[in-house]
Length: 231
Image (cartoon, rainbow, N blue to C red):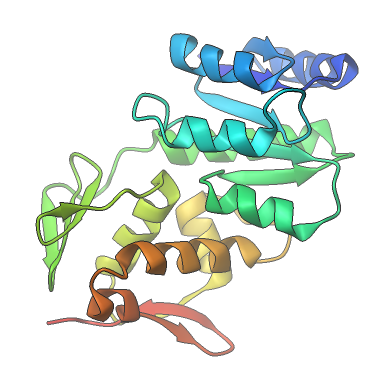
């Protein structure tokens, strides 16, 4: 079974276009034309993925994303944002709120389908590491997808957790931004690499209660990032 997708867009023709192509691919479709309805459907129907337009009546797409990612029952649902805006800030804010990917209108239905498959493949993939790992004061529980500094649980988005897990299980290894996109997002990303920089910055902020751990995520100029060994 391909999965259940919630399409959130106030433009009927856009919803119909996406619905037609996704149903052809075998997905079951849910629809919402405003933000509050989308939040309610996400809580009651638990879709496998949400395609979310940013320009919505009532509460906008960024607020919808924030509400979904801040709710324990819906936080793990991946979100692909759609935006007709050219301003980079909207994409950056959406990624910081926990969105998994974005597409700018007009977009190719084929590209959207490829992005959906990739995001679902990544989100549904079982962890290849079991048990727990402790690096300095940082502890990762792989079975429960939780991270702690000391006894304090970190409130991480799914992508932030996956990135931290990748770093912590490969201390000292340098990852290019492209490698991080492929390993954390699960596909080769066709676009700029700002996605990685946004998530690294947000992750550092959440780790900042322990400066040593936050600073362990090092920028390798002209290459990418690595996690310094804290032992």
